[in-house]
Each structure stands twice: as C-alpha cells, then as structure tokens.
Length: 493
Image 1 (cartoon, rainbow, N blue to C red):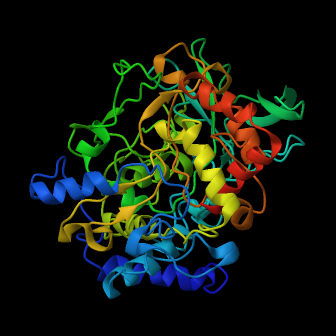
Image 2 (cartoon, rainbow, N blue to C red; image 1 turned 180 degrees about the vertical axis):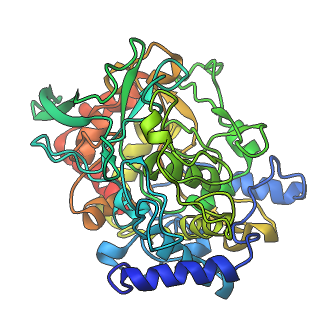
C-alpha cells in the first residue's frame, strides 16, 4: 500500500478517517472467561474436536484451514500475510484497509507541516509499524556483519526497566538529539552432533552496545533481544476462551509429564485489572489494542490514551528528550495517536488472515506430523482450539483453529534465557506455528526464535531446552529421513 499511495495521499487519508470514523466498535471484544452459554452437548463437541489426533494415515477434517472460515484460501507468495480474513464483513474490510494505511505510515518529528503525522520520537527504533513487521511477518535478523536488521534490545532490571534508559534501547533520534546507543550483534558457532553423526552449527549471539548517551546501563540491567513476531491470526487468538487456556496450565507439573506451563497474568493498562497475557515473546500483553499502543510508545515514541507520555520511553534522566515538542493536535485530542487511529490499526492487525496449509495429504508430511506428535512437541504446541461463540467476535466467531500453541509460559532452559535471575528469564510463551512454513517466502530469509539466531527450523528445534529438552533430544536422535519428514510437516503449516 505504501507503493500505491504517496506520502501526501496517506496524510490526507489520515485526516479524513480521523474526522469521519467513529472511535468505537472497530475491534472485536475479547472473549469471556468461560463457555457457560454452550449446552452440555456443545461443550462435549468442542472438547472432542480439539483433542490431538492419534490417526496419522490421512489429514484431519478441516486441517488445511488453520484459521477456520477466516483462512486465506489462495496462494499469495510474498504477500501471504497481507490479506484480511476471508469472511470479513464489508465494514470490517474498510477498517482493515484504512488500518493498513496507518500501519505503513511513516511518522515524522514535530512540529511539521504534515499534521496528524508528526510526533515521532524524540527517541525511537522505527518510523512505521511495518518497518519491524516485514510484510506483516517477522523482523529481519542481524547478519553478524554490522546490519542489525529489525532487532530491538529490551532492557530489564528484575521486574523493572533500566532507571536511565527505560524499557529498551533507542538507536535512533530526531534531528538535534543523540540516540541512546549503537548496537552490534556477533555470532559464535556452536557445533551440535546428531545421533547419525550429522553436525549442525548453531549460532549463539552476543550483543555489543556502544556510545551510551547517558553513561553505563544500571548494574542490575540485562539486555533482552527481540524481533517482531508474525501478525497472522492475532484476532483469532484474542477469541480463545480463557478457561480453555487455564485447562492446559500445570505450573507445578502435577501430572509428572515434565511440562509446567502457566498463564502470565498482566495488568490491563486501561482497567487496572489482572488479565491473561497472550501476545509477545513473554506474553506481556493481553490484547491487540494494548500491544499496539505499547509498540507506538516504545518503538516509535507516540502517545496514546493507554500510554499518554508524549516522549515515549524517555525517562526523567533524559530532560533533553522530554523537552522536545510533541505532535498532539488539540482539535484531534490530547495524544499523538487518537483512539480512532489506534482502533483502526487494531482492526487491521486483528484481521490479518492465516494462509491455507499446503500438502496436508502428502505422505512425508503425514509421517512428519506423526513424529512431531510422538516426540511430545504438542505438549506445548497445542494443535487446536475453538474460539468464542458470539456475534461480538465478528469474523472470528466459533471457529476451529490450528495455531499449534498453548499460549502459556514454559521454561526453555539456559540456552535461550534472557538472564536477570528471575523465573521469567527462562520462560517463553509458546509461539504459534501457523504460517511458519512461509517464513522464507514472505521474509526472504530463514529467521526463527525470539532473536532470529536460528536460520533453519532444524536449528530452532535444537535450541530448545528446559521443558522442551526431551522433545529436542527425540528429534536429534531421529534418522535423517525422519528429521526431514518432521521439518516437511512444519513447512506445511
């Protein structure tokens, strides 16, 4: 869309939609906590249809449609993550298109002649949402040669941000202001020998930070690398019923299977209540709206009603940043991103379709699926859910979906740990696997895990530790043809 509409037209569209579109009702409400509205027979049907299969002789019914009726049914190549839900309403499609324009809009520093597009920074990592989510997929990984791609370095000091630099390092700044730092990623080769003596060379990243503008990081601060995850199916995730996630929890491993997933409870910035986190590598956000507002604040430096600080991630130790002009327009409201804009972006992000699966009936794919299930991978990568049934769910109403995730936090071992000494440092939300086989098609490179260190799906599996160590070891012990079959299954997702 950026190629079709020049900056002046995107600016005009922004002004029109802010004035014309009501600031309510664009995004579907979150699913309630339980299914009390279903009959006993309907509940049993949901339970039965979401049980992992034991028959790998043929594809399961509807398996090729991972997003249910919302699934993108056509092959779309590099644009596979760029289409709205197939069953979206006319009004929903309009909001999707307008939200897409805002998602791709390049913001500028204030004051500027392009009103309603200024307010960038003053410190920032990107000028547009789409700069981190390449074609609505993953961010670009550092290449180890000085190109840092879309990597962001979050800063954590226990449960808090760095007292001086805030929640993440900002490597860019508006004119006249110095960025917080420069970063450089280097890789160390880690050879791993599999059971059939095949050697795989993993990459262990190290992150070098230079030119810190306000002195060293805090003594308790840890660097946590992050790449943007793909955005397909996020509206469906919001409609997974809470009780279905709670049924998968086993934080104390009472069943003795070695898996102890847990919901991460976070605070809703609007209501102040504790809610279940579903989004982000650490399940730190509970809704698309709050995740989008957080990204506006921390990545681009834009204020919303959820995070109203105009200077974004700037702290009181950065007065030169706090004193810079902001881009809030009095006639549009007190923040730089009015609720109308935030809701349109939320509608776009929540409306992106999951592509149809490929080769679901292929013999090698079915064998790989059997191996994936047999290795215990589905203990965390839960295949299926049925979303909330209710008209407020919109296009996502009562859909059988196949995300291959339980959306819980799991201990993934020291190899992937952030550091910092807290329980959360070793825990990661199980990422959905739908669309993972299209990563290279959409992004142009293999790029997996939270920091992009894994160039192939095989490397990603071999980095698994902690609760996932038995599944990882089962994969490493397989004969080569079986490993190839398992990877073929993943590439079909």
